[in-house]
Image 1 (cartoon, one colour):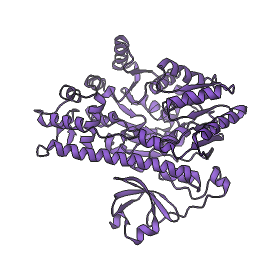
Image 2: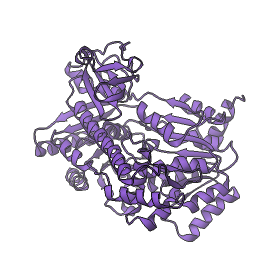
Image 3: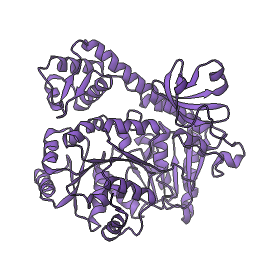
Image 4: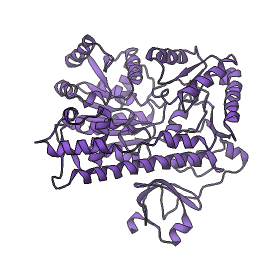
Length: 549
């Protein structure tokens, strides 16, 4: 097998100006060049895009990059344009007919090496047909956790990518994400159909981030504390630039207004703003014309600013996955940064409400009946003629029916009802149970967020444990360590090793995510995250290692 190391480093240096590749980047690239599919889980700021940008220039044929946000696509296109790499184009709903035609012509003629698409674009047969004709050589899934129902940011359209990859003849696939615990990684491999894949998993630990939680007794006190902390940090030139995350658009506007009265260069950012205004805020922050952006979760994906010195959360997030992804915007240059969560237990009631999502039973029934009665496999777009529902609800219904085993996808991307003996009402009931299991998982994530906010142990140990990474010693760089309440974690439990399978008498199969002296945190398929008292579970025979089950 040829050694691609020197050639990869040469392309990185001469085309992109990168003097050195990180070992994780280089290892992932070498796997790609050896013909493997690759799953790369690298922290925010680790340069995941390099993993496909460099090999793409050494493999004949265009590279498709699936990216969930138009702003993120544009950031990547702009970044490639500043290099010596061939053209990068994006095909999306904002293009005129002429612009779309130019993009496809550039791809087919070999002028454009990189083509950025949203997963929604890949639900269109005409787009996939164009890709088949172009002879795609590399298929990249950015933010790959979106493909997993275990993932915190699940997107139904991502589930359609596996069949698309097969229609393209299964070119080499690279799946990229910043946060993915073992069950999410397993799901990504299965959903995308990765073959003979190699995984590159970096540590989730960011020791330069100081972790803290400020607990408030009422909303007014919490708001005052957020404003005061931001004011203190921005008053010091060394810690002036940062992000404040809020739970709602209204709060983003509120905090931006409060900070502006302190003379801080600040702007709000949320999905309710015009695209041009969001782009302006983004550009001004990157150019140091703003010191603080107060944002909802709409701001963050693809933000590459190394000198963010603080990230404050004015309310608890719905999961530690999204929380950690957002705090990862801080200290990307490796220098110290402040990460503080302002916590009021009542805020998590709002998250429970916001994440509630009932299964679309009526649409499930219409989709199941339409596919059962169809004379043969049906293209997803054709379902719109038989099912009177928005495309997003149809897609969610199809995905739930697929996960329940009632519906399948043919090699050419069409849908079919798998069991003519299965009544549609039963298929719907099984799909509803899948949706209910997702909901239980979502609620368990909220409880893990509560656990992080209220723990007296080392916060970094708790956070890393959530992702299945054991930190034996307290970190010394969080508020609980400084308060003296953190404790040593035991050596790995040989009965229940980290990331091993277990079986619970009531909750079924699960994966061990973290181990403490007297308890385990397990992610169960059916009920999500549970923290169990070890002695009670063993004494009552409730929990056993998978091999012994």
